[in-house]
Length: 116
Picture 1 (tube, helix red, strand yellow):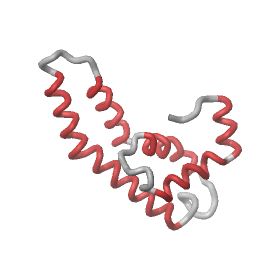
Picture 2 (tube, helix red, strand yellow):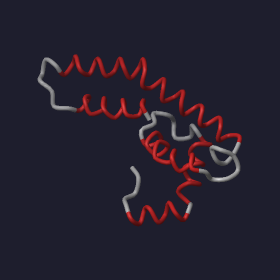
Picture 3 (cartoon, rainbow, N blue to C red):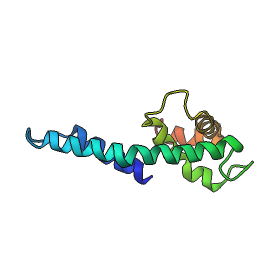
Picture 4 (cartoon, one colour):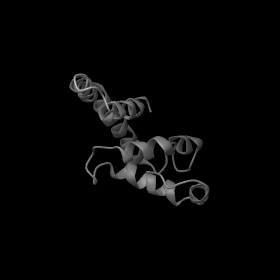
């Protein structure tokens, strides 16, 4: 979550109404942090989760666990903001679909909103 949070904050800075002289400096800082830290960290974390899910259906093995429930939001957030190609991370995308198909997830959607 920390790299995703940095991405969220910096996306707001990138799109914020800033004074004319500050805007290029702020955007340059955001781009450099994104290139040097945020994107490489997001890629590294997603690659690790992808490798785990390529070996088993759920994070802790063959059964859904609290780890899967806890990771459902970061997975949704990461894939929604991912710069990876749509066909990249197939195990992670299949995992997200397994989570979404669960009856409890469907009930939560009825009470809340569709993830974006």
